[in-house]
Structures are given as C-alpha cells and as structure tokens.
View (cartoon, rainbow, N blue to C red):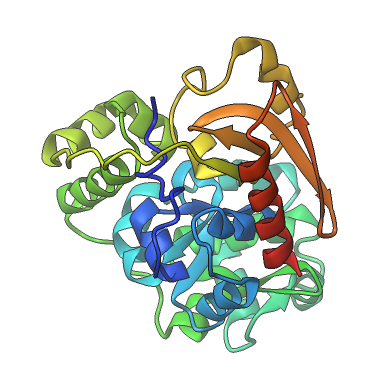
Length: 314
C-alpha cells in the first residue's frame, strides 16, 4: 500500500507551504485552486493566504517542471530541477503549429517580459505586437522558461501572469551543472515522498527516460518508510501528487471505479481517500462540498474533512 505519511497526508503539524513543496519535490499546479487544496490536505492550519504569501514572497514558484507540466517548486530547488526538466522540443513544435516563427523568438519574449513585472497573456499579446496570439503567447513564455528566463507570477483576477525571472527572483535560473548531483537530488526527494516506488515510477513522474531514472535511483538511498498512522480520511483535490506520483493507480483504485475518477478528456476528479485507497469522488460549488462514495464511508471522519475544506475556502 502507498504511504500516505510519505505524502504528508497525515498532516504533520507546523509545516509551512515551502516545506511541504520541498518535501514532495514539486507539487502539480496547472489547476491553481486544486493545488491550493493539496496544501490543505497536508495541513490542518494553513490558509489560502499562507500559500499566497509564500508565492508573493517568492519562496515557492509556479513554473514548468516534471513532465513539462506546471508545478509549484521551492525557489531553492529551481537550479537542479530545471537542469533535469527543461525541454524545448515540444515547445518549438507548438510554436510552429501556432504560426509563431523566426530566429529571434527568445529575444522577442525576453524584451516583452523584462522590466514589466507580472503580465497577463492579454498584456503580453499587446506587447508582442502581432508576433504571437492566444496559446502562441504561452508557448513563447515556455520557451523563455526553458532558458531560465521566465516563470509564472501570481494570479490576477483568476488569470495566470508571466514574469521575467530576473525581475521576480533577481536573476535568471542557472541550471545545476553537475547532472549526477541533480539526478541524485531528484531521486532522493522522490523516494522520500513516494513509498513504495521503483525507478519506473520515478521516470513516469519526472518525465526522464527510464535509463536516467535508473541512474538517479542508483545514486540515491532509500529512507526508512514512515510509521503508519491509523485510519484517515482525506478529500484530495484533482491532480493531487498522491494520484500523479506513480506510473499506475491500480494499487489505490479499483478497476470498476476508474472511469468515475478519470472520465476522459484530461479530467481527473477530486477523490475521497480512506486509509490511502480511493473510496469515492467529491466536488464543490464555492464552499459547498458534495461527496459521491463508492461504498460506505466513515461518517465522522468524512464530516471533519468536509468541515476543514469549508474552513480553508471560507
């Protein structure tokens, strides 16, 4: 069985947002409201404002990370993670598909971002003066991010913003030059937060080729498994690391319920975890939570979780 304790779902006291991100290695964050609820699932005391403060103070940074997907990353971890996850091949292909071409694209997006502070996509599109529109703007930012020159800023009216790394963090991100050191750090963080796991799981989570994942695995050491807590219920958000961190969800999700959790179209529904196993799905409208159980759930523990979601959202 997967360790909910390794994933901090037993909610150890006193963890700030930055420490939670560091302990998990990175936290998937393409859906910001879901990512905020992932912090809640791991802390009984954090608020949305606490996470926002950690972001505004540049302790945690939203950027392209494992698998080329947006993640929260601790600012101190950007150099080694960037060294392993930066890739431009798909970005260049997507730019061509969007009709964004030229041999000056990196300089173009650099000039558009530099010295401006966080900009929305619409503001960037205006500054690019017709060279890129719509998703082409986002792929240009991703190209800059590949070179350590851009990250995402805070949401503005619910929309993402983009910012030059030198403006936001004081300097561009310089990737760790020692690849073995970066691989060792990656595997050490991964193995601490994912138990049990194998190199194939690390490859699936990180996006690294399996050979490099095996090299990383050999450079790291397995820590002792955390002690198991009693039965716990957690309302985990969509795209939670507990679901995304291994190559297979079979150990925690019965095959008969897989389509309910993953209905298709890239949708992953928030789940009810009981003792580390998915026993239902849930949703919300505002702070109102509704649960669709697969079978009978521990009522008192579930009620406490629902109340805590309301605490966090309100």
